[in-house]
Length: 95
Image (cartoon, rainbow, N blue to C red):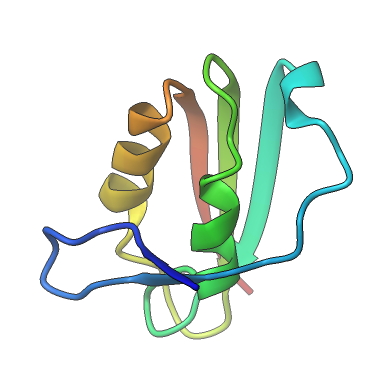
């Protein structure tokens, strides 16, 4: 199964199916997600994880890259808002 999260962008970012979560995210007020940057974008597993976000949560994102910063903040924020959540912080870290 593939979920197309960003059909209106120049590139379609694909979210591959991931195993069901064994954690109930709705129990948490704030959720922090950390992901590597692949070719200036988050990997498909990260995109799939965005689909699990319950509405009304505060989300912090940390993207990590060895080659440069991502160019995906606006797209990620759009998906987070569409899930009824708020993007509290977005960090782009180059290691």
